[in-house]
Image (cartoon, rainbow, N blue to C red; front, side, top):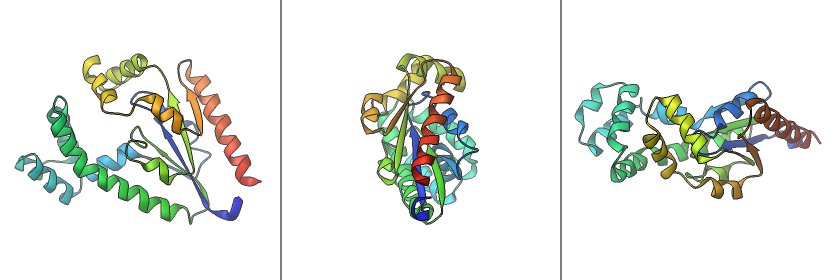
Length: 205
């Protein structure tokens, strides 16, 4: 591998585009995959984060709840309140960015190909820490329908997730490679595997 350093790949898109599925297709061939969503979930199990959220939302009961229960309550709070959503982001996003920066420094010293997947990679500016960015795209309607079915929420509520994310067109301009997920899953799998094999070939030269 070129200079024996860690190569960092991001796989992103908007909610429901299929970036998590795309990442799973290459899970056996890379050194490791991390989900940005999982990092956010882990933060909600940290006492100091829970305490800050409790104060920010004037919800002292958060201090006696587990992470999953807090996530459920936060979804209700921020769903129709842009100010509340901004408050939540002000607590979680800086910590997620610091985690990404720290992880990038560590992984660059570790030989291998490391993958981060998540819808908010570009929104948080984390794409600037990566060597390669793959954007998975599909139509807004199809993606919102997937999210509504997956999370058992209304189409309207699922659409609100797209409203707070960068337009997919913006993300496409940042991409090194684009995967189209408007057809069968096997087609998306073939695309991501072809891209990944190309990256491996480049690194071995």
